[in-house]
Amino acid sequence: MIDGQPLPAAGGHPPVVMQVWGEAALFTRPELKVERVTYPVPTPTAAVGILESVFWKPEMRYQVVAIEVLKPIRQFRIRRNETSDLPSLAEAARGARRVDTAAHRDQRNAVCLRDVAYRIHAHIHLQGHASKPVAAYRDQFRRRVTRGACFQRPYLGTREFAAYFGDPDDTPPINRSEQLGIMLHSIDRSASREPAMTWFTAQMTRGVVRIPEHGIPAGLPAVAGA
Image (cartoon, rainbow, N blue to C red):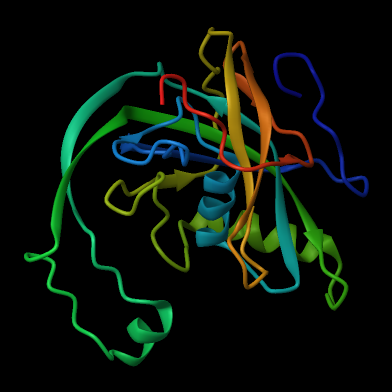
């Protein structure tokens, strides 16, 4: 239950829950090319990345159903160094090319979030080749969250903003409701062509963003004034 409303069950199981927090976050809006501008809340894709950092197996996937915002939404600006010369994945894996970051450095402004905390609710769905029941994966997830175990340190949108995580507590979500507009839902990189994106109309109700199971396929949304 969130704010008196039940969350959808999957196979008779409620969602697994994890709490994350950190000093800063940057959930980049992909339609803005020059400056890095954050969404006011995490995208489902970012939330899945956080969950997979803690526990992931090839025979399962996460479906985020709700994100609770536990601290006021506050923004700040920073200037970040980025490189304009990026090797391909194959070159990076072989160590075939060295990147001179000093010679290809770009400075870009970024609009980020300060002092954030979220509670992520997600279902675990099994792939066809899974050999264990979903309860086994749910138990493994909960044990790893309680122990603070992770495959890699989770981060809040970008790697320089590391996340802390743990079991959920009774911190209430913020008392804020607003339309958040069109938000990135998922990115499909399985095809050899450009990644396919899906979108959804996001709304925060008393600090809770509910996530639909599927997004709407589309290209990048138009930017006002562009």
